[in-house]
Image (cartoon, rainbow, N blue to C red; front, side, top):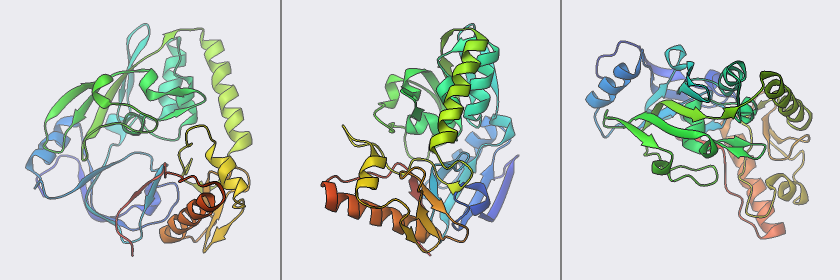
Length: 293
């Protein structure tokens, strides 16, 4: 491994870092001190070694055999948000949706309230075109700074990312270190009211106090994934220690001792049943990484 100024840990358990609280270890976990530390490390790292970025671990199944190569986790040095002008924020890749939306509120910037409801970080929003309540990252992103797998630092525009539903063309192994978001002028009280509305809607409809991973499947064109899952008779369906949420059927739960194989296997069984009843192939929205046990 190349020298680092941050923290580099061998065989680091990932289960504590992901929402499902399951899965194996990272062969190496790198928490860079700053963007230069990350760029220097990747520049010196054998290109044959895979690299994966990890945010809050909400949209992720880490398989039980762990993740080969290097997992990059952007910590406090990247959890920053600052105003550039009256409607624009520069956000570190490790900043949470709550931090971004709250800072936007304090600065009187509207249009970013939906980030309040996405349990992730800016890097994940940019990569996955994260969205909720009718808005997506592509609606607010101007540009992002990225460290490529080669260690090269580049700035990519919104157009460069080729956004579609829950997808971007961000290269494999690239890490988003910051992004610039633009909203519109707004009244902080009205922005807070909208954030409260979104938070209440999530609390009412989603199993937020469970070990879960967020939305499991993408909504197919013209359909809601949760309705297809429900119509296939999967509400409450269990496998090992994993269960389809009875509150929101597009959420899978770890009831306590589920393995990642239980969770992924349950998801595949749901896909099989939905295909059998509706003819529709559900696509995973949750990322699945690593090796089986």
